[in-house]
Image 1 (tube, rainbow, N blue to C red):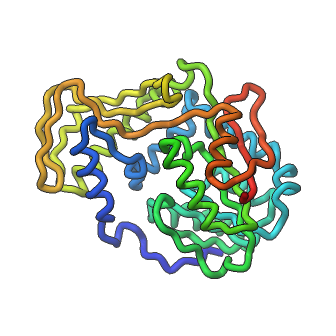
Image 2: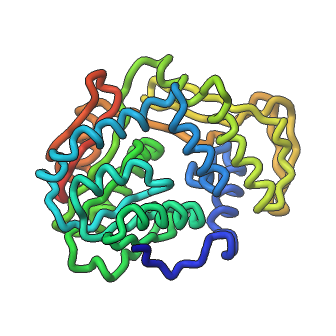
Image 3: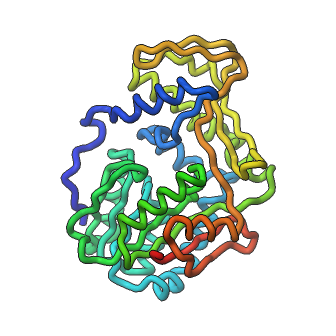
Length: 319
């Protein structure tokens, strides 16, 4: 059953944080914008296409882990928890977890309101006895969980290695915020992408079909549409690079010629070859992931990975 009193995102004014973040990011040297603004409806749809690409191993690997270890999750987590999913998106992986642990409620959180409500309605139909309580919001900011789950122990669910999109300090801050939001008796099931062959990593973020490029360039289209921008989409190309020093993939929008454009009434210039750094995706070794979780107030309990060690699901309890 779907329980919500939220209005669809399309009916609300654009979040002023979008304007602030884009203006601030374009004013920096080097230019950089937060990855959360990829996810308007079009961006969310493109990301779902990315997850089905042959080059993009994380989604199918993590899904296989969720399918294979349901009994393990049930034993470790127990029944009757409220599952709180951070950055739920289409929630395609979530049914595997919900079937395994039989929760008392499900709270999906996502910044893309219309996309969230559509996926929540599908889940509510698939699990008619489960209260589904969608919450539109940015999990990087203050959140207030529905009061209907106040008495329930919580399981945070943070799949997809989204934690890797953050600088380590910010990742620790987010984990601490999750710990505070979810409470003392809570647990967290989190996906973490492993360090691996550079060629395989770059291919996952620069696919032959150009879907990831379209996803990156959609940010330009969104800026033009929502912030009165006049950035030439054909003036940028998608770049994916491996930064070995920081153990991360970086996505950039590179200017192919000198550019002069406006956003929200402000003027910006870019030289040919200059980039806007739009996303980082940090990769972790087994030791590093445990250190990160402990720094964020979580004690690792169990870990599951595929035979090739491409991806890990880590279960942690509140420390």
